[in-house]
Image (cartoon, rainbow over all chains, first blue to last red; front, side, top):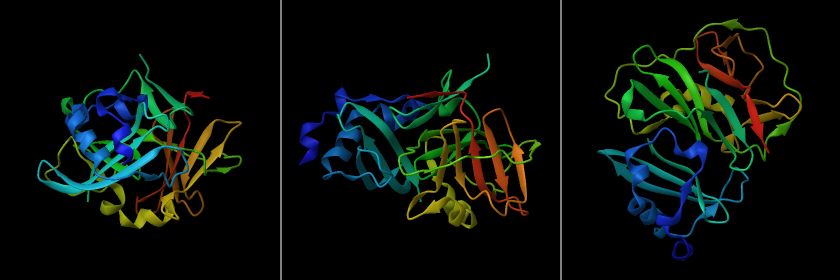
Length: 84
Length: 159
């Protein structure tokens, strides 16, 4: 599994992904759960990043967690909970 | 101090310096167009800022001419609802009529003018009105006020 090579504890945020800070973005556990949920897919937008889109809930809302990590596996380029 | 909008090719992202503050300290709601985030003031529904992951890799590369515009705010028509400040809401779920202008083959329809360092998202044709909300953002609107396009002019582009 791809996730075995990535530790959420070691990831940093890009400038565009870091602000505004949302509570779940401070949770390495939540990020690791997404990484470990399955293999990433190719980013359809053309970047070389690793893309996860995982169904989930946050504060009672249904939606999707979107996570995109740089190809060198050091930086979170995008991490967002998007409500349906 | 005036905030500066920056596009960074290394992280494919759009952000501000100084950085935006926490979502929890003001009356703001965020709508997401794919991975791009549009921040609005909830109380009066005006667009405040645009940021997020916005790769230009698949963009059409051509000149983007700034159209005639008026300087005013852009507001969305949004009924009151109990929103969560830490959640981003799908823009096209709330404004489905804009989707065909902004999305092409499942991703944002982006044009990039490398000479002018200017980004166009959506359809610039058949736009009834362009409104410049600040030095970085021009909104293209339909007659009924729906958003059809965004012209983004960062203050700085990092390659």
